[in-house]
Each structure stands twice: as C-alpha cells, then as structure tokens.
Amino acid sequence: MRFASTENFDEAYEYIFKKLKEKNLDKVYEEIEEPIIPVVTEMSKHGILIDKKYFDSLSKEYHKELDSLTKKIYKMAGTEFNINSPKQLGEVLFIKLGIKSKKKSAGGALSTKVSVLEELAEENEIIKEIMAYRELQKLLSTYIDVIPQMVGGDGRLHAKFLQAGSSTGRFSSTDPNLQNLPIKSELGKRIRNGFTAEKNHKLLAFDYSQIELRVAAMLSGDNKMTKIFHDGKDIHAGVASFVFGVPIEKVDSEMRRRAKVINFGIIYGMGVSSLRKSLGGTREEAQKFYDNYFNQFSGIRNYLEGIKIFAMKNSYTETLFGRRRYFPNINSRIPFLKNMAERTAINAPIQGTATADIIKLAIRYAEEDLEKVKLLDKAHLVLQIHDELVYEVGEEILLKAEEIIKNAMQTVLERSYLQYKTDIPLVVHSGSGDNFGEIK
Image 1 (cartoon, rainbow, N blue to C red):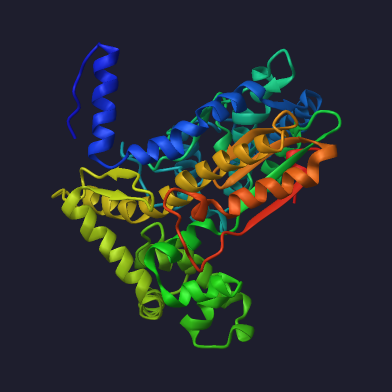
Image 2: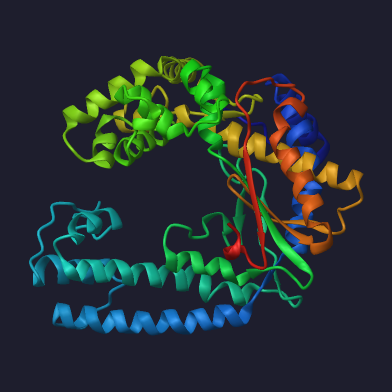
C-alpha cells in the first residue's frame, strides 16, 4: 500500500477520510473507534490504584527466592556464572555439563530459548531450576520492581492504552504493558493482588466466554459448532463428542483436552506438525485427528480455506465489521514468509472481530448505558485486557452497574450498525473484589 505524504493537517485529514470511505472503513471509525476515544483517554487519566506496600513485600519475598535459586544453580553447575547471559548459560549447560541439544541460535551458538530448555527440563534438574529463576527474574524486572516506580502522586498507575496498538485492531498498552499481566503461574497471578480499588469501591471485572471460538462459529456458519454454542454445551466436550464419535456425557478429560488443543489451534492456523507437538503421540495420529476434525466441522474448514483464497487474491482480510488487515507477503515466493502470512491471515478476521470490534463496541455501549442512568461518576473503566474489561465501582451501585455493563457486552452485535443476528449467544462472566487477584 502506498501512502501520500504531506505536512498540511487539512490535506492529511481530507486524504485519510477519503481513503476510509473508499475502503468502506468509515463506519469502523465512526461507530467503533471514534466514540470510545474519550473513554480511553479517561481510563488512562483515572488510572488504577496500586498497593505499593504489597508490591514491596512481594519484591522482598521474590528476591529472596531468586537468591536461593542462584546459589542452588551455582552449586549444581559447580561454578558461578551470569545466569542471565545466554552465552555463559549455554557454555555451562552444553559444554561444562555436557547436556545434549541440537538447537542452535541464528548466530550458530547452542540455543537457551525457553522452548529449547522446556524439552530438556524433564531429564536435567538444573534446567528446571534455571526456568524457575527466569520466571522470577522476569516477574521482578517487568512488573514487581517496576510498577511501584510508575505510580503517580495520587497512588494510581496511569498506563497508556493505545486503541489501535496492534495490527488486528486490538488495544495495546505501554508504561507498563498491562496486556501481558501474568495469569498462568501462581507466582505471576499474585501480581494482580497489588491492583486495588479505593475505599468504599470494588473492582468489577467482565470477560467474554470463549469469544474467539464463538466468532469462528459465527463467521463460518458451521452448523455443528453453532448448535453446541446455541444449546449452551461445553464447546470442547461438544467438539470431542463429534470427533471421537461418542455421546457428550461419555467424553473423558483426555478427549476434551485434545479437542481444546485443536479448537484453539485452528483459529491460529495450526498445522499437523504443531498439533502433534501439542498433543503428543505420532504424526500419523495427529493427521488422523486433524482430518477427522475438519470432516466433522466442514463449515470451519471451508471458511478458513475461503479466507486464505480471499487473502491471496486481495492481499487483505476483513473482520465482520469490515476492519482490514493487509498481508503483503501472502503471495511471497519465500515459503517461510508465505506460510506465516497465511497463518496470520486465517486468524485476523476472528481475532479482529472478537478482541477489537466487539470489545470496543462493548466499551462504547457500556459507557452510554451508564451515562443514561447517571452512574458514570461512580463507575470508571480502569483496565482493558484482551477480552476483559475492569471497572472501579462504588459499592452502593455494584449490582446495578454489573447488570448494565454485562447487558451491554452481551447485546453488542444486535445493537451495532450491522444489527447482526446470530443463534450464538455472547456469554459474559463477571465478578468483583477488593483487588484484581481476588476476582473469580
């Protein structure tokens, strides 16, 4: 895509809005992006209260554990070295200790990336300790020791939220990046306890249930997946039932796990090799599972193939609302670039619809509905993380605000300018607490 260049504001304004109209993107701007600009500005301005004493206590605890791990690693290695240096770490693991690894970095040195170490951890105790060290080190250097220093004089963290901070149209955030707050490990989850509500307020959080899978079912029109969601069944158990040919009540935990892997994998363009790696077992088993999935859910298969063909022809994809993402490498002669563009193109309409268009419309309608009943001064949006919205709400209006915001989030499609009708409900979970980590 070629862009014009000018230093004149009026010319630039005219050019941009002319292009928006030409590409049918004017509604995306007018109905989705523009209405929430003041809301996003206010979210950053209001900020979220930080418990600095809690972070200080957590820092002391984690640094103590880090020192303990450091000594343990030195003892196991038989030498002191910079654990944070990939070069020194590689020398200790692969030369001094003789651990076997065939994976090399771009520079030719033996790789110490997380994915490589994970494969070696089971048979090498020192690598387990190094991975634990790395997790603690990252939590401290990225969040625990950094966030308290960023807190303003009002005791609040005022992160910047960028409305179009990612290529799919999703939010991103900086100073610090709150989109990546750890959630997978217990050590990481504890950071959330330091994000709190002021006195006589609660943090009220909402998140969409399996929003990307619901959007995949909507966009593809797949009959079986639509029915599972329409009937309120568990999507992973429902998919497992079809793929393994058993009644849903006979689906065991392993069947459900395998269905969950492929359910989330397909919307990110997962191939057979990646599926085999995630599931374990042989490539033949993975291929059989992969083929059976797409035979059962042919609507999904045809939709994904259709996206790929559309992207190859037009060099872009579109969300349900018409938001575009361009893929200049989709027809590249370099296989790596072409394959990466194809995988990303498959995911873009789904992710863009779910965590850009829908979540932004939810912000807009929740704000409008709170304003109608004059509750905006007691309910402030303080965080947006992927498919989740977090508000700081006065305790006396908690139930009322929860009802209003949840309803706005669940009805965005029919309320939108598309007036989109679907048999697949948008389901929203909500919860409240004195701090972010407390919310279930």
